[in-house]
Amino acid sequence: MFGFGRAPQIEGFEHKVMTVDEMKASGALIVDIRTPPEWYQSGVIEGAKLVTFQDPQTFVAAIKDDIADGRDVVLVCRTGSRTQAAGTYLAQMIENKVISAAGGMFEIVGNQGYQPVAPAV
Image 1 (cartoon, rainbow, N blue to C red):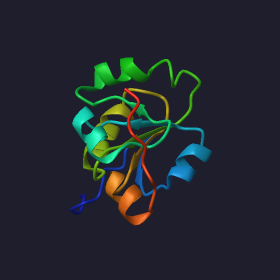
Image 2 (image 1 turned 90 degrees about the horizontal axis):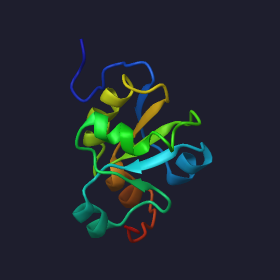
Image 3 (image 1 turned 60 degrees about the vertical axis):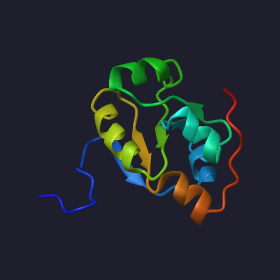
Image 4 (image 1 turned 120 degrees about the horizontal axis):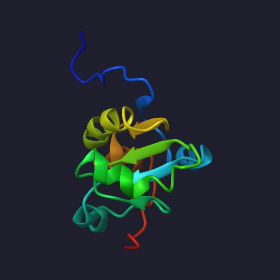
């Protein structure tokens, strides 16, 4: 049984708090799955790929070339809820490890003090 707020244990998926430095040091592809209005409202992580998650197949198609080398994928959203849901799907579709950034941009900006940049889209 799963408790409230606990992610199911899915092989290749992890939901955890990470700093931007940790994300970048890991060599992972950082993907911000929020919508364009959200990117413009709060800014984005410098160097993150900006791909709104609408459905798993379209999302995988958008990132497949970037992850062909086998690197991990770190998903970022506003609070970590969308990335947790999206990550559980993706981990079952791709061989790469999928990490959901717990707390999302609220954690990264609000608690860690990261200064986001304007989206380059």
